[in-house]
Image 1 (tube, rainbow, N blue to C red):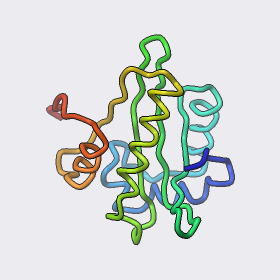
Image 2 (cartoon, one colour):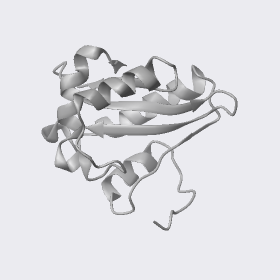
Image 3 (cartoon, one colour):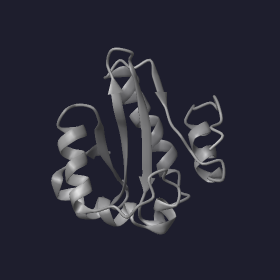
Length: 143
């Protein structure tokens, strides 16, 4: 993984608008350049979020992104997010490995005590990946 840069904007837009990715996000509207730049300005540059690009080791190809958002240094917690945007790299363990790495970063470098995520119950594949990375089911939103 490597830190996200502004030059990653077009890839992130393409990945987030991939129907497989978009349909598993709570925010499902089409992702725009303006929206991403606003995210960078209001979240990344302010330290409220940190975002990494997932790089396939064997090819050096950028394949997705993972992040910690709404980082709360007072209560030492943050929300985790991830997307593998390149379809042919899904089901190869990159999501689980990236999840483990960013959680390690969050706990050891940012000194977080809790990292949480939200997932649709129907997204069984992602939930299995999260569980492999150490997340435990804590609750269920009704809507």
